[in-house]
Length: 111
Length: 136
Image (cartoon, rainbow over the protein chains, first blue to last red):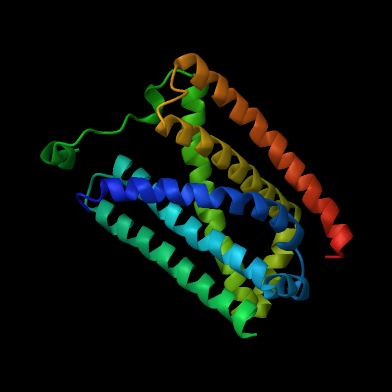
């Protein structure tokens, strides 16, 4: 983990900038579609523009969230638990990224 | 604490030592909303995953989101997104070396708090209105 501070700092800021327009689009769309039924939600993501934007938000967001959570973990946890939590944190973000990339590919591009 | 002594690294100040100021409240809220967004974004990932791979679970999730508790959780996520986004802009402004004077930082902290509620309310209103318009 050492000597990666500057890269992490830059990735956190760059992802923040990318997430801003995506979040503005998402907060509106979520309210419309997240409580919607199967067909409506499927139709929404089946449009590849929506699939791509949704996927980009989750993928970039998951990595941004991982960096933020790692910062909280290293601030407050100083025992052997720290490395386990950092690993779990990394694994959760990775799972979300893989699951979403796979789902968007299937719904928006392969369907 | 023994690990702290051995590693020799400074400990981050804990929440209870701070006197209330708007800047301190915004800082803590930034972390709090970050944690809310972490959980909510993982749920969104699950929402999409089940939309593709397990429709019955998807329907169960949708049913929950439509319930009053679900709507409150969705509204909370939207507000957290608004706050974190706008306070994030404040952070980026600081990174450029500006806006750090106590008076300015206090004023922008209050602005972010108020604007986050206004923006969240506007997004909720527009979204709910659009549900009818789009027939969803």
